Amino acid sequence: MATQQTSAAARVLVAPSVILLFLWMIVPLAMTLYFSSLRYSLLDAENIGFVGFQNYAAFLSDPDFLSALVNTLVLVGSVLVISVGGGILVALLMDQPVFGQNALRLMVIAPFFVMPTVSALVWKNLLMNPDSGLFAWIARSLGMEPVVWFTNHPMMSVVIVVSWEWLPFASLILLTALQSLDEEQKEAAQLDGAGALPYFFYIVLPHIARAITVVILIETIFLLSVFAEIYVTTGGGPGVATTNIPFLVYKEALLNFDVGAASAGGIVAVILANIVAIFLMRIVGRNLEG
Image (tube, rainbow, N blue to C red; front, side, top):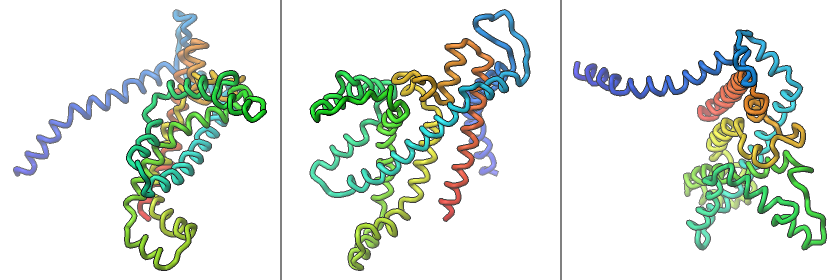
């Protein structure tokens, strides 16, 4: 009886937080769904009417939608490959005993705490600027022409910026997984004369496989909504070369002033993100069960 009373009291105490969280998520989603069914342009705010699924059809048939979808997938896939691959390498290096190890680890994870807008500005103006950037100075010192990064290689440039931001996160998670590796396994591998590659592929990689799947899941969810880096560096261009789904929604809302189409685009982005998240959750679940 006492246990039931305690459980009921716990539900009552938790209920306000659950209700608040529910409203925090549901109310914006419901409003977005509502606006997505309206003909609602800020340039003609008095001419509002119900149009059903026309905004969805218009957004999906937009000539830029397919390019934005491809750019989104390319950006997410490229950053995952670089951050996970580089994160494994950095984690292996940070796991070695070196002088000033704590300071080194702090410096490695520091970029993750820099705001996306600030990091994009640093890369655009201090590193990749073709006139006064560090890379341009290095190229001239070697007798080569500086690369106009954001014009000639826009998507690559954005991938580099975003990868720089997420590499520390992957490194930190994978380093934590590496440090949980049993010392007896390490000693047994050394006694058996295992080389560096067999040791990595047969002992280290299986051990950190779960951490890798978690990194991929978390990064994918956030990478699907990358916006600030694109806005600051390329503005979605040249043309639509770096326009992803979030930036396309921004263009509909704040450049075309079409609230209805932008709301429909937001719902499409949410659906795509959930499809990817469900797919990845199944992979993670199978990995954890294994």
